[in-house]
Image 1 (cartoon, helix red, strand yellow):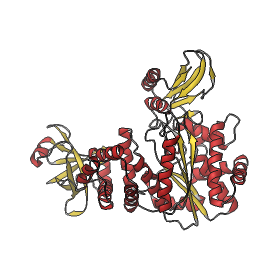
Image 2: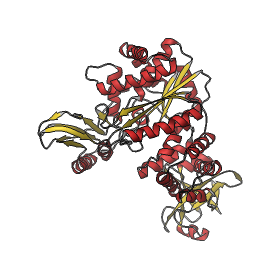
Image 3: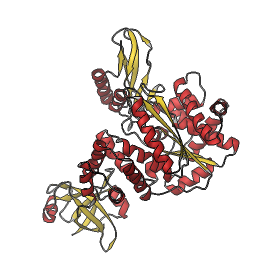
Image 4: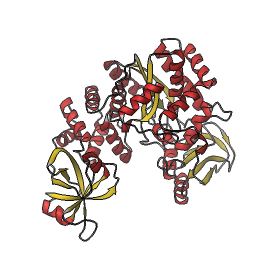
Length: 505
């Protein structure tokens, strides 16, 4: 069926098509079913999308179709251009998803079919959600994890920069305010320059999935984080480092679409998490990797047993793919740093890099520890020697200089450091009794910060004034909430009062 494209400038985050109800009836289609769309007479490239339906005498005529910007951009469609629209056949990968839902293992061909269809938008968001749920319920065997990693790499781009050492650092998350990555990348980048190592550190991080902010969300407060892979190569070749969002690079693109669904479901399946991390690192050519797994009550890995289980699985997979890895287990039973939220976390990062007196020492100490572990792995030196080098470039300001160089290479400006502003609507959460801080829930703080508007509102979030084991007086401030609108502040304060992120005993 031929239809004229009506531009409505819909940004849905995924392919979406809207049909007039009479057109949908003629095609015998219902809401959520998929259609195949291609340019009329130019059927070399097509895209599949679920449909929404609008009633009569509204935004569409029966000979029109509205497309989200994702489809318009992908197919290069112009206003009023004619497209060929037909019902889309359900892909075979749906049967493989059902197979996993029944608890049966999937082979490489089946997993590659699912991942390929996700990349090519042949699966609806609901079908992807079923795949995520199936992996969450039944996990992945080691063989499935290997095959999923291979499938993710095979369907994406590769960085391909010819250096002897390609380094990176990653944390699976789950600990609020734990913004060590920008500090570690700046330290290691400074060491690479200082010792003229034949190395690069092309860090591609994620946005928030279940937390209040991800590294990419935080970096976006001072510079661009989205680049095509060709431009990224120029940045890395110039600075030997970068701090970008992996989703814009097309490296393991299926993972970014899986993350969108995981964010909605608040799920992060462990087997898929391992494949996600390693596939992106391998696509960037990483051969030396530090993995920081935090554990503790309220974090993604509640016990050290959970953290050790992930460590064992990841080490085995990394060895298979030839990546030298050091995996550290760190405490994650409370936030690291003072800020929770994009701008607030960037302020913590800057205080550490600039070595200000008020800097969060817990964030600094962990960053030094992680950078030292990675450097010891790379240079094959004792940890004490590595720590001395790391502290040296931090204290001398070389790490801060490297950070500024990365910011400018990514289209930012150091003038933005002074322009960082938090939400103007503020609420202070007070202790209702005198005592000692016995528990600080990462998940509850994240939920509070999200109600305040984080990570979409860059200035939203909270500052933590107390940490575990601190003494507290009645009516003393536990944390301060920041929001960009009064309504969001009210919501955040209300949810904080109900779930109580900080426990005093």
